[in-house]
Image (cartoon, rainbow, N blue to C red; front, top):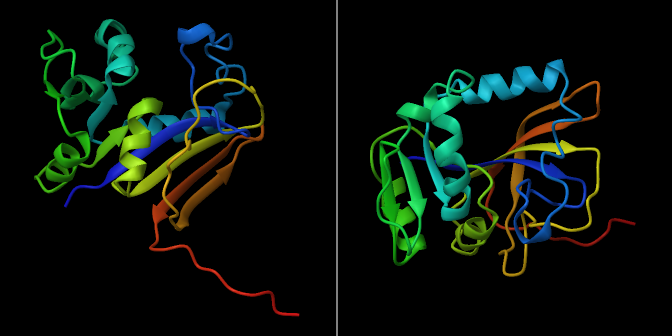
Length: 194
């Protein structure tokens, strides 16, 4: 079974948005903090063979950008791009498959197919559907030492209670924390031991 992994740049206050839609004023907020060690982590992650699951808004930004910048990320061209959309059904950027209708059902079936792990990046609105349906297997987060106040957040209303465990971590000289969390069952509760 394929894993679904959310790979996100995130602020201390949970913002993952980086594009300027809806009046967001901090486009590219993470570039000012990236250092050599963070760049190496990013390159390692981009070197993995993957398929991509993207929200339509993210795809609309990526579609004209990545084909002319693929020297930085060659795998983006060969990855199958699954796009959650009820308004689009075709693209000249191949291979692309549009998923309309019940996204949770389609992604659940997609995870049962053969192929590389499926990564989602950005796509804040779509991620809420995936979290509610408990379809995210892991989080690859880069936590930046900044707060933005406004913007789309990784976790919003409706996120289910879920436990995760750390499987990898690193702190860069600029204070960027790279963490990999894997889904680890239900939330564990208890009483204080006094």
